[in-house]
Amino acid sequence: MSEEQKLIRAKGVYDKLVKMLETRDWNFTKHEEDLVISSGIKTDDFPVEFVMVVNPNNEVVQFLSKLPFSIAEDKRMDGAIAVCVANYGLCDGSFDYNISNGDIVFRLTTSYAGDTLLSDDLFEYMIMVAAGTVDDYNDKFYLLSKGMISLQQFIEQEQGED
Image (cartoon, rainbow, N blue to C red; front, side, top):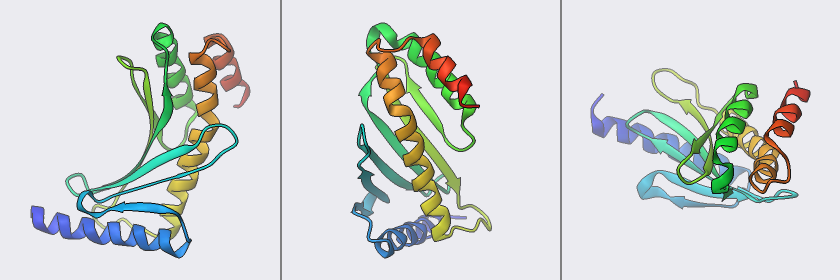
């Protein structure tokens, strides 16, 4: 498939995603030139800000949500272990961790290559799973970063949720 064909296909996927959000009266901002949508939800603790990216080169839709804080420098190794522990228990998506600056980003990706069926339900599933996962973990990572819970307590909480 040529680069032009990939871009045309990606724009079609992007338009489908926008239409799904509009149908559900979702508040979002389009960045059409980059095939990006930014949005967020309010939760009881931290807001969940996210972007949805249609990547024509890899033929994927990515849901990315950067946590609104960074792991403190003196807790970065604990943060790395905590992210590994959290990822082990996830069935869909994963946390990416930048140990040099303490940033954590949740990433959920689906391919639209080949005959993959992209439905409104799949897009809604991605949003709900990602937002729910970020909401479940952002306070735990924050407490660890601030020394309000130990790494051992983080691990015990995760093992208790199996």
